[in-house]
Image 1 (spheres, rainbow, N blue to C red):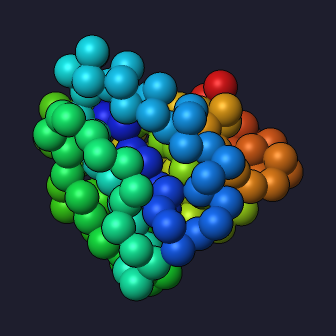
Image 2: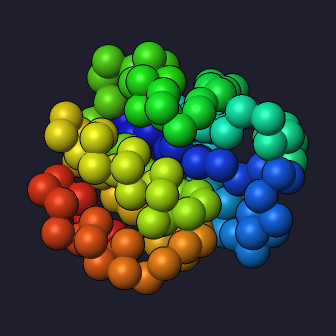
Length: 131
């Protein structure tokens, strides 16, 4: 089983509109494959704009507790974490770095928004694959 983690795709961040279609495609795929889905949202930036007909775990985070919020809801049997979302140079990169210490992580770059240099940095992390 894999975990799909969607980071900060919410109305308070206008850039989320640029990746909504790829995010929807990932969510449909996760549903078909029976993945565990985590929607991680930044506090005070609005609700996740996509209605999703599949069970998922929603977490709220701040700059200081983004990793802990996600770790608290990860299923024990997680084999791989796939991450997509906003700001590869900020939240996504930090989350990838922290989670890759314990799990293989795949960054789904087609469903990410941010700086290309950050994707290059993540390619150098142990246990991380950028697709």
